Length: 575
Image 1 (tube, rainbow, N blue to C red):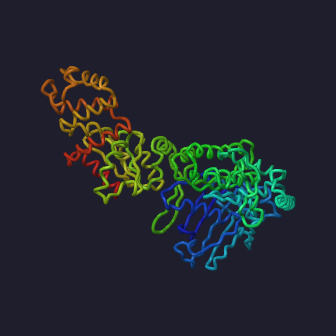
Image 2: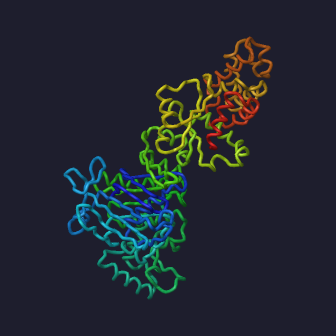
Image 3: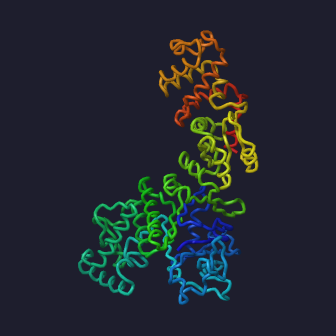
């Protein structure tokens, strides 16, 4: 099963949403409180076989006069769902262009639409709807279970025991024999508690172990059924999975979550809709990568075998998870305030997002992004930002949801436009030695993207050295030698600057003008040209080390092009 369209009205923080996922794997990101988890909650509420209890806070603004309405249109339907005995009379058509129509045509994909409505009575009503059929069909929890929904949020320990509604109960045997086998298990537990001798429970434990390992859960010994002592009475929930004698519910959070997800997913033969909220919770980076890789591999294998692929909707705040999911899966969630209308957008250009994810993936979790031309600017601005909080109520820019991103040189403009199209507030900080084209300037203006640059055709090295005092030029040369090597820097200078020997160059910069044929400004231009060509500072760490020098330079020259551009960027970041 795959969701083709999701519409939400008046549910929690969402006034309205109309989203067509279009992919089998969707990674939802967005700033905090943007409503990512609420999107998954809406899908779960509509398609889960569980009963949901609703209260006033579930209504937008706690206003129960406007009903909650959630509609989910599902494709990749199983044969059972399309049969007339099941839900075939309510099948609609989903066109190649991604439009829904009640009268399916030959090339349309068969789809079903589930509508969940909750009014002021707080009583949820699930219905199958189709405008060509006069009366909607009320759906039971058994009906909704056919859509194969799995949700992993915090953790759901009930699936680690043989309790009512547990997936382990289903793994124990087929539906007709499950009750009898469990009764036998309970009797045996009362008699001797040798649960591992009950074949049906041991087989289910073995299956659960294999599924959990496949998704990256740590297994110390082997999964086996065991009796959890200390619980009142003996019920199905008293028989739980153990790992090497220890109840699995006592394992680490990450292992519990992965095991729970794996066990739940295993109960669905094929084509599950999997909802994963903050997959990184409780997991180390390598297990985040492994879990996502396994989920995607399962979909790829199903596609290769021409089986139902299913769908995974995942939220994350982790750049590791985002990197493994990939730019192709990216969906950015944004809520427009104060209307609370939600949008979920895909990038207009994937290439620029791939570049951003390669250099500064964490920027995608911000609200406001300053795109720079390269590593020098990113490093310098990250260093300079440490000086800004005292001028802004002691607030760091990160507290305002701000990020500084590497635009990879000439791609900075296209990246800023792509980010703006996704709903980010975006600006560009760049050199002015390579002027923007008329087309780019027009596009940036139309998108409302400000550009901060030095003017006068200056690059960052020229902007710094042209206004640095003799003492600071000398300190910058010492810093360059420390980072790039004394011999390399001095040889560069000796070749570039006439009438100066290595001995002279190793002396104080203040004396160079006296010893050579160039005046102070010419010397600064020569040094700046060398710094650019030899890439002295083209490194984010080295660029960050420049920040203390730059701060002293702009403090001493507050009206310089460098100071002006940096001040404009600072004010925008704190706007």
